[in-house]
Image 1 (cartoon, rainbow, N blue to C red):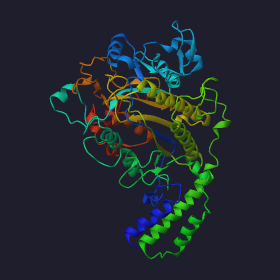
Image 2 (tube, rainbow, N blue to C red):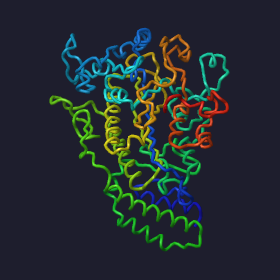
Image 3 (cartoon, rainbow, N blue to C red):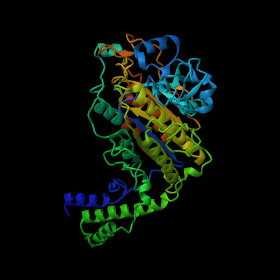
Image 4 (spheres, rainbow, N blue to C red):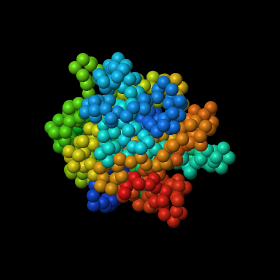
Length: 516
């Protein structure tokens, strides 16, 4: 068997099995990485560039004045919804005032902009959560969610003067979706490379969780998870596919018969046999494990509307027919992640797992009040359900979820939307005992004036934030919690050294206070 034939044949079985990347050979041999406890890291990518100015809204007088001036008709009202009993009780992001004195409330079925722009939940001394996100505001107040201000792709610490004087290396092709997404995924924004930082961690830890590997993706073969020796396991849809998978299928039997007829004196034949056998065996094992996933319909905890966790609301009012087309994929992917964490820990006895989830559609150059509201509402509901599920299963201390996005948006509105920016906010969710929840982390933005040093002063002062925290600074303390040592950290984040405050201490580059 020639190498080309081997690759072609190995692909024939993989396409017949639920696990699309099971044929990767990196976990066939070697010693398992040893950890005594279980931890899971979840990366939630908000594809398209989330507008964090309208997700986490500044409300202090001078900051809000400049925010409102730049945002114009898409500005969120400076009204504290936490002072209104209606919002605290109903936890319904679609409720909006329907009278001038604001004493009457109803679901804004015809004018969703009223719901999106009606006000904020003021949970800190500087920022408030958009009205569509009461559940995330509640998680912040509970102390299990924190916001990171102004994070983005950087090669090294960068200021407006550095850019003007051209004495700093900037990421390639700023403000372009594909290149900035690549920079987020590779943590090497000064180069066009194809391997990701979580792929490099998996390379260092290979083999782990044989035969599935460290990284699991619900968004295809994402570059962030691809290493030199390793690749993620990918699910195009929920692993519920295993409920339909029949290991006695004639296609599988035919392939297995072909395995037995292959000669074993050829290295490619031998490896081909071993890979295919592992694929079939593990698919059968996983099918059995999937029978034991939690049934969330039996949980006492319910979502904000009193329904089963992870059910996508279709009504919030007896007279309402549609809940503004929420993104069902985020509910499905977070439900499946919760189930995978449970069986990964309790059935397969894995010690470390990474899950990658993507929610698309954040590139709102127009119709932002109408469409951004749906994304924020989907996030708030789905993440609230996810955390409740973890609590019910007793797993909330074992998990950290962190968001990324291509970039932030411009502070200056283009009418009823925004344009591509640079820095933006992110949030972290965890019940870990030493997680510093209920905090605004990073360098707080105090000056929202478009002519300030806060912004990149080109392109007609659109209000593109210059990041004050790099992607790797935010994720480094999470990887440290995850068990990544200094050597692997350097491999994952080669630019992290540029952010050290103490040249002799690699942890001095970490974003401070993520963990206590």
